[in-house]
Amino acid sequence: MPHRVAILAQDHNLIAAIQSDLSDSEVLELRDDLAERIGRRRVRGIVVDVTALDVIDSFVARALREIAVLARLRGAETIIVGIQPDVAIAMVQFKLNLTPLRTALDLDEALGLLECAR
Amino acid sequence: MTHEVLVAIESDGDLVEARAAARALATRLGFSRTDATLIATAISEVARNIIVHVGTGRIMMSPLEEEMRCGLQVVAEDKGAGIRDVEAALHDGYAGRGGLGLGLSGAKRLMDDFDIDTKMDRGTRVTMTKWRFRDELERMKEKRQRRP
Image (cartoon, rainbow over all chains, first blue to last red; front, side, top):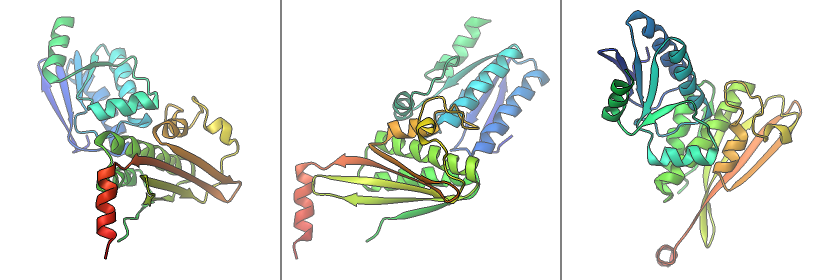
């Protein structure tokens, strides 16, 4: 696990809080680490907090999509939280497509959504 | 005083440095947070292109001064094999490894000016600029400072 991501387990959820900008290899490490952890503990939901990311480019967007797809194949839902307003504008101009990603404004909202889904 | 910034691109960790340097320079030149984000994102894409397709290269960022506007110019250079079909590379969905196939076309949309100069077996140079219009107050201030 990249040390720049704090991963906490809470009930049946994993919360991955990204602490700072990540290199591409750290992003891939996070993806693989989350995929592996879903099976280790029976995880139903993953929340990835990207508040600390100043840039979400095509590579990061693809990795986030892959996390969501991997998690779904393993029976878990993924919610991305904390996309900054400037980052959202850049993603729209870039025409980055984040479907099938679910998003929420913050951690509380995401945990609420996961609770409802159960 | 020169504000030119040079970042050598040799590993994927250098992208982190390039993004941070872009944001710092954009902020110093008075760009908004949003514009700084657009510039940093575009730089991230062209830097990754260098890593994925060539391996090494460099990114230069420098201020451009004009009467009515100022700009941040980015030059991304590599000595790779060159891009065989630039038109295709700029087309959405171009199968660049490691991305959504949006790298160059996305970067182009985020910037105001965008140009690719590529020569087979010699390398590629991407030049792109973001402009910021100066308001009257800023221009007056500048003139005052230039007065001896």
